[in-house]
Image 1 (cartoon, rainbow, N blue to C red):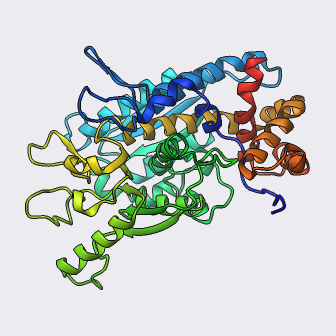
Image 2 (image 1 turned 120 degrees about the vertical axis):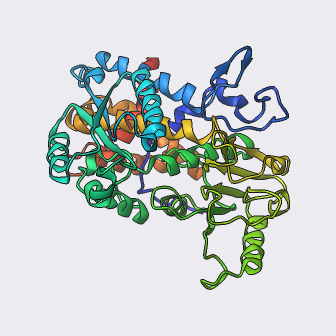
Length: 448
């Protein structure tokens, strides 16, 4: 079949990531010294003498710092100072409010990771008595502050603010060039349509990246020109339909050639009635078909099984499936996090994430990465100039990525590579194409 011209995004950090030899072990080494031999690891932390394998976060965050330091050696980028660009998190709630205690801890983790990437972290802690008018005034200031790469509200708000502030309306006023957490409904809509946009929602995007690791490393899937492994030929089940995880995840997967089942939810298969037997039958039929399960349900509305609080048990899974479990419900003693998949069912999976150290660190990594990209959006003219100055690197890089995915000769894709280069540098094209292109060529420039 003749080469078909590619018109979508090209570039992304995953092309570099999957070339790293230190990442080869991601789904092959033991984890936590237990029976877990095929864990997809998002963090790579070290506890005591047990060294976990390096994970997604432990490789990408230092690389972002390395790239940021390299800007000083690129004439068009040398005036960009990454440390002067902030990832802003807004936390609303009093220090003694238990409702925001978990959020406060999460914000601390994001701040520490941000600093490791070369960017700065900025946290605005606002009292629970703040009024909507005061909040909108502050948001206007943040939207116009060029030192802020991305901004996000840590939800839910605590105290009275959580009752009187309409957070949907508030988030819809976030400048979409700074909406790194995908809270603005315009961002969600563009992602759903597959249209040109600045960012994707962090957790769904992180989940897709972790699955790409498995498909590329474990199944030999081809990397698409945008840096995501092709899901072609796999039946993928999305479990959960929340506005910030399940629903955008479902829409993301449609673009990566998957056959997507679901999303499963509380009314699946029962026509709105509470027929538990019918629901369980359909839940099981779909999950037993799925090659890949993305789960983000939580236990609260379901309680399918009399003997366990987990949603998925071994008899509901296909042998050799992949499990990306983003659920973290706190139940029983209120301290230990639980996912959707019973740990005893993991033996049926080819690879899987754990409740801690899996999707969470991938989400934070994606957030920091998008803050890094936000810095480039704030300096898009300089990015385009850097691409023009390095056309001799951009075009061959594009041609190599296009030819690899299409299984074609580089000569066959030369015209397509030229068009994509021209799009990236054109002042009227969406900035995402220039930023993607810069990410694609930085490793080559740094190696010269």
